[in-house]
Image 1 (tube, rainbow, N blue to C red):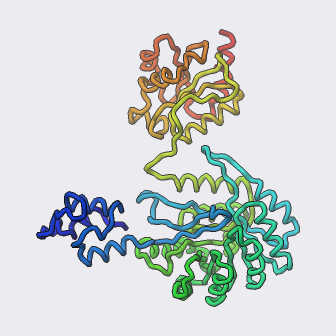
Image 2 (image 1 turned 90 degrees about the horizontal axis):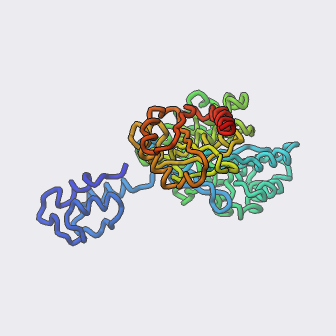
Length: 456
């Protein structure tokens, strides 16, 4: 973990109350000010002439990269590793787990499967998601390199897997501009070094045990081969795979143990219990997303299962100190008119997209007013006084809602029904209607509301 400003200060002349304390030669008024800047990496360590050797050593150790980043794919769009904590609440997770789908080069339905995988696209909470990568597995057929070109041409990130070094070289050279990730199964150190020199591409390296991984990566580090991803390949580890991956991550993050300071890949097809059916794959991929695989290769593609993994990953890789939020303003959903209902909710992204999605499915156009609520959900914002009658009324006025409609009815979330009278005091002449508690009930409520407007 990085040193805090106070920890640094205690080792500076100011903390030790030496005669050089607060000399100002570094450009800071005090040793404490210098320590705080140094902790935030806002000043060069060598600005201080009196840095003791023990502090210099501690800073070098604390600034050492715990887990290297590895990039692959066109324009290096897939980034793995670079993690700095074991648990998200300590700070945040950095680079989302990459999900790849395995596709054999000899698959009789290759073209259709490739098209299904590459055409998959879904939007969730304002983000568009596609399949991250395809792992093209060499089936010992002469068409491996040609299939590699076919996959790369779609623009998707490619992982090339083969047990034949010559096939891998041929395919790797053919799609080198796409910066594929390559994996020579059962490779010896000299094979990996040879591929690194010839192709200069990121590689997956595997071993049956953690000790063997350490031995392998230590040899690679000596030969300056560090653009690698680790793969623990041992069927005996199925029951305690998570435990083994935790040991690797802990060694990297807490001990900064260089031989294990790399991203980790897991091929579900390496473990029989992981691929009994698509549901087992989903469960294992979800568990490995949490602890601690940077790359998970699924044996089969199922859109519903992939969506569930995206949902999990998106939740895990959100900064817990910065909730997803959208711009507070009025959103016109559908072909709105002056008779369209007016609804209000907070600017928490998940709340907005859930509500907006249900409004769209109802077929009833709505003016949706979003209040500034620091990215909190309705009940949380209400409890924190971020979603009050005054705030809601202010949003209505600032967005000139009255100019957009002929009626004066505002629908509020059911969970804050207690705000009804307060809002009416802030918005004289308005009728405040209590809506649904759950977004899923919005379509039925809107249809009833629309029919009431028509009869009026």
